[in-house]
Amino acid sequence: MSDDIKRPELDLFELKKEEINASSLLLSKENAPKLSGFLDGGFGNPGLNMLDNSFQIFYTVGLKLKWNVFDWNSNKKERAALHINKGIIDNEAEVFKLNTNIELSQHESDINKIEELILADNEIITLRKEVLEATESQLRNGIITTSVYITELTNLYEEENRLITHTIQLELAKSNYNIIQGN
Image (tube, rainbow, N blue to C red; front, side, top):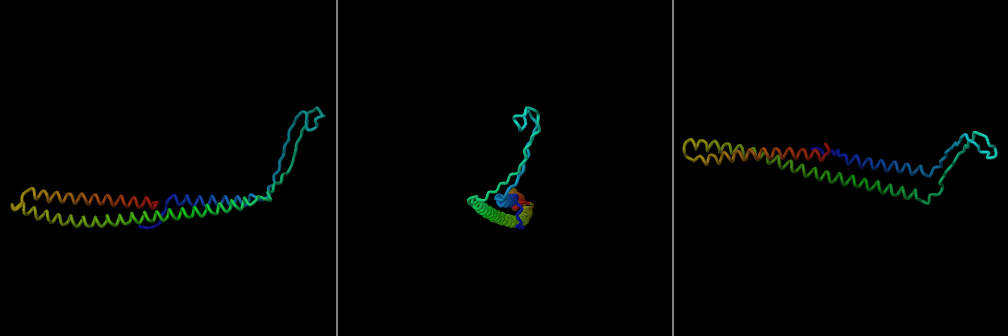
């Protein structure tokens, strides 16, 4: 099993870090001077001259410069808060990876145990078949009763059912491992 984690939560952590980087870039532009222009105009009676009672075209044009020279260290504090938030997100991502790796190793050990159980089940089934052949021979020769033979046959079917159960458990454990891994 590989340890490559492809969970969407990791993408979310990366997007949060990108958001913090964009906020930091926005903060760096916040104290830059801003120049804007405006134009306002119209046609009316009276125009800008209130004494002239006729329809006139009027307009106003201008430029506006805004520069926040002193921000009283609020920009610096916000940058520090963003830096702390970025560290928190990094820690959360590492904790998530660690917990996911722990969970993956637990599922991997479960898979190994179930595979060992399947090997043991196969050996037991082989032995049960040999015992069933011997009891079948004894039943034909009249040494044992039918109930003893049926008991051995039932034991064989129980072991085969146990093998099927362990096979299903193995597939379930493998699919859970893949889900946790993000595949």
